[in-house]
Length: 350
Image 1 (cartoon, rainbow, N blue to C red):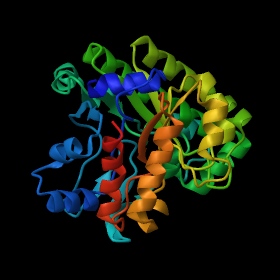
Image 2: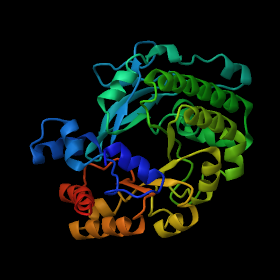
Image 3: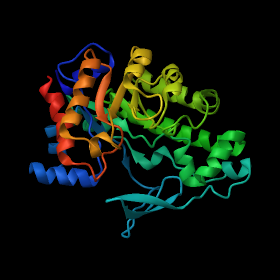
């Protein structure tokens, strides 16, 4: 099987020659693995690990984010960040939130907003063809995110209050964000001429103990926008990968109904997220991606424990339905032997 055939057969639960895998790690882990394995660049690393996916993206050509020499960053919506070291790696910390002082619906309607014209999609067809044989993905978990994305511009506490009150100001910001991403991905999918297999978007709708908002409120506030967006993706013969960390089990039936094809990242150590239960209740209707815990197993477990968890998943999903991947970007503190054991064990089961 090609990488693409393997992934699509897995998503459709038709079996495969080996379980598909996906890699995601902090830049520090990339560099450490490249050094240990004596590889020249990240593409060679993805080949070594067996990653079945490759990403393409429209090219930014002006109007939005501008990186500065001091590693500050201005986002598409006018938010500003600065990069700082933290926990052995680096993070971007918000330093300016342009929506924090908005008070009225009129204020929300007057804010500056990005345009799909800021992005060049003309090379997506050739970029996709360059990864022929792989499952080609466009997008990232921070796209179409109405909670986290707007919180970075308005403040998380403000957004939670907005959601509770169903504030018309906030709903206007949601619609603006939905319109932008709809148009950007519509153009991207059309330009790719069928070369994109998945669109990756997402939102963190839960903590590790439970949902941030009820499924009913999620559908009421965001459901129409997501359904319109997912229908457009499906009309272009692509599938939806939807990211959310945390305890999302109660939301899964609603995500399925809205059109999600793959749930990423399936944080199995969160409340109610036991893998056997998820497969039993939802495995016929949605594919899972993730499940390899980056908080405990990969950081503190032994190589034998990592291998055991991989083998458990291979047995449980022998006909498909799971793309093996970490439950978040692998942290800089993760032992490299555990990471290699995770991917090498899958190869040994082919």
